[in-house]
Amino acid sequence: MSKIVIAGITQFETVIKVDKIPFDVEKQLHDAPVHVGGGGDSMNEAFALTTLGDTVYFMSVVGQDQNVEVFNPPDFKVHINTDYILPVIKATPSEIIFFDDDQHQLIFQDLKDVREAKYDMSMVRPIMAEADCLLVSNANFCRPFVHYALSAGKKIALNMRAYSKEKEKYNLDFLQNSDIIYLSDDNVEGDPYEFIDDFARRFDPEIIILGQGKTGLILYDRDCHIKLHYNSVKTNEVVNSLGAGNALISAFIHYYLETKDSVNAIKNGLLYASYKTGFMRTCEGFLTPEQVEQWRDLIWKTQSITDIYGIDIPEN
Image (cartoon, rainbow, N blue to C red; front, side, top):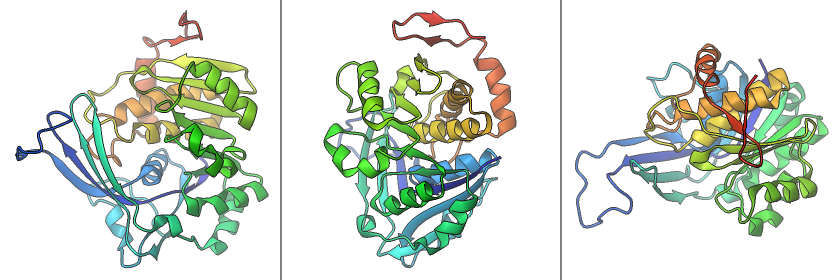
């Protein structure tokens, strides 16, 4: 198992299931399922990787009066280490998420003063020296983590799903130094393969994962000369797709560090993300390694990948 430093935002989430988005604002919602609890991309990654058996150093910031143990729900079998969640901002960020059966989402986010947050890096250097990988978001306070990982010669994985070309200039220190980059195609215009070619030429990462929502993703592996679309897979009935991307990148990192095989890792990532969508809360629904193996035997006997021309490629 690997030792992984995770750096990113922690927040409170209110998740509300509604019949349809947009919904009638004049109509009072009765019996709508509501969940309030901890969340955020990096917290989801911490739960996922801890469940997979990795040693996780989760480094984040919360409000000055925040009790960090509230981020470990008592009904969860797995608890994350909260020792490195620092109460250094005025208030903990929060988010309200409405979603419907078609997985349309309406999200309101209040980041509080997290953009001005400063993380105490004095504890990071010895931990980074022992770690195998940094999994980082592009929050401002995470920038120093990239430089510490670089100086320690560690692999850097970037979860930057909210990508846009206009904001690239603000994220160059993340993009230029990451070995593995995960993005969403939400704001990608034109041919996705041409986008990946251009992105790879400019930033030269080892791995690019371009999420494509319900249709799957494209995996680019520079060293193995791979550029393939993988179809999404089906495990659970979908309840809430929010957090599926965090599950995917977490599982990919776990298995890629373990095997150095991007194809094996992305297959496990796809089924990991699919299973995650069967749960309402964003920080639940993560499989153990034993469960991954069980699902893999079922899923990859019937699923396929496609090449850049949409032609099915037989699985070995």
